Length: 102
Image (cartoon, rainbow, N blue to C red; front, side, top):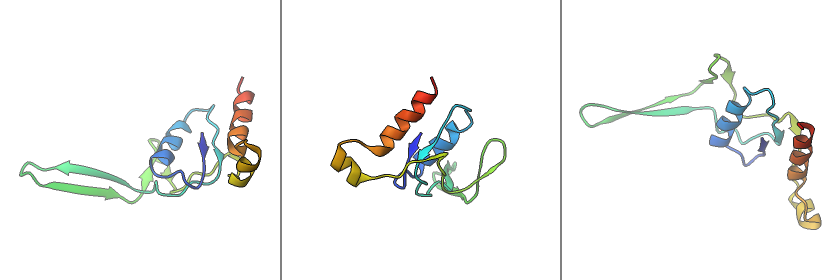
């Protein structure tokens, strides 16, 4: 999974869900940190609704999850190198990691 400082919320939740698989490798940069709450809309019989937000998220196993995802393999985003060389350093790092899985 490739993440960086612009990865937030849904991407953070998805990354965490994939981490239960032993073959998942997270690389890139620490995420934005917006995946620390969960909200649920409950529709009531009288037509009104109740919006419930949980401020602490836990995995299915009960582990408290932080707001940010830390990569296993650091791969800094370098837009200047990408423009200069035409190669995305993060994508190159991800492809190297995929090659190790074969």
